[in-house]
Image 1 (cartoon, helix red, strand yellow):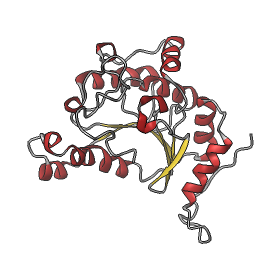
Image 2 (cartoon, one colour):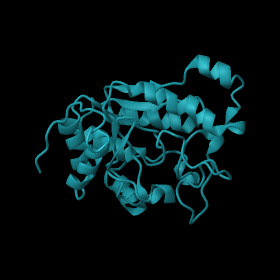
Image 3 (cartoon, helix red, strand yellow):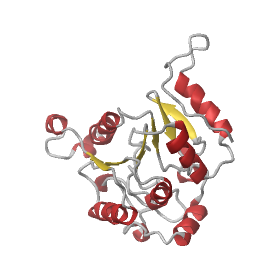
Length: 245
């Protein structure tokens, strides 16, 4: 497979009115349709977006696998962690455990703007009345700012996690950037087998019924047979925080 280094391109093609990132994502999905996660990561990091890509990790239930793959390829790639101020203590502990294990050289903690929180969420209870705005302040806006230097970013999303992710592509475009989803085609059995093969530590809450782990106020245990993300914003129509529109 021949892989060319990609440089900045105009946002819109004047003849088709299709954005350059959209066309690029479509092309990459075709080119890497049968590639492994490691092949996709290696190509994205070293050939497609050299020095212009970051990995965004929640350090949640399955995060160790993608971080393991990244450490196999390049420990210097920036790893962005959205520190919302609402995480489980166990998540922060897990982050520190994995950071020590993989020895990343550029792990960045991305925090919400203090002035925005003081204006819109002074008592820290916005999640109860307006969870969308809470996510916007604590995750979406800080991430957009942190991604400004990058042309692409890597996520750990997978198709099996929920109905809303069932058609997740390997590459997609958002806000003029390419999102890379190298684990998209893996299922729960694949993840479990990989954790065992690579002897990866599991999130402390995983065996307590938390299959997808976000902020503490908006995350519940998952019932047997329900999809992995059913415990996120349970009882509401909300299914995503907003960083994956």
